[in-house]
Image (cartoon, rainbow, N blue to C red; front, side):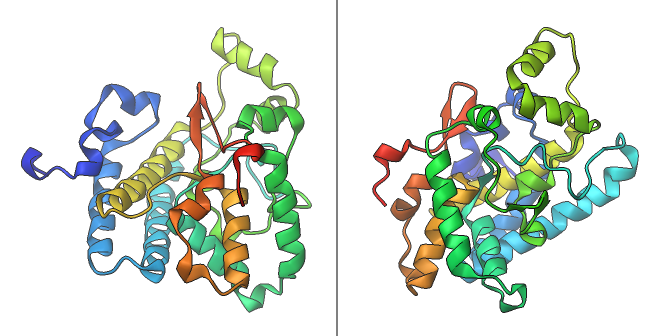
Length: 271
């Protein structure tokens, strides 16, 4: 990729600043490869169907990358029913949301959509304006957590796929005594237990997709999973999904607050 042809969405991004790669847990080779692939896919079409297919391809490919390097990584304690980490904001791109929506709309899932939408709306109201730290402290779970398991596991976002921990007790401590646990990590009394390799490659795949969307002048913003799906279901049920604009999803857009991310507070949402 020559400097003259550097994509505008990456010129001022993390990709162009090596000092930020470690800070933001980005693997530059993965980022560049997936950006190239996403740009190529969007060049053939950029509607909802094509964006969902792009999410399918990116997730499938990065899952394959993780499967290839997993044997060389530390063992992890994650298993079905372990849900300590499922109490935080989940950052998603629009194509990932379309993948989740497609899963929820599948009649084979035999879901009661009215009940799901009510639950999502209630949870969206609870988490509006809250950072992940605040959600940990209040123990507000993901709306898709059912009896300790992920109800959208086959369609789960990239951020969920990249989260692995060597010690489930560490994750429990983060949920039940976050401030003490984080202080222990910051002062060196305790070491973090999250695996770096999967986090870096899944982060890179997601950033690549978002950057390709922005480069194509599409919606490359980061959204909070629960709040965004609540909005999408509303449009889907009204048969207005094709009318959806980025402004409609603004209540679910994540913005950085200090070292954390949150959606706008509920009093600024106009849904």
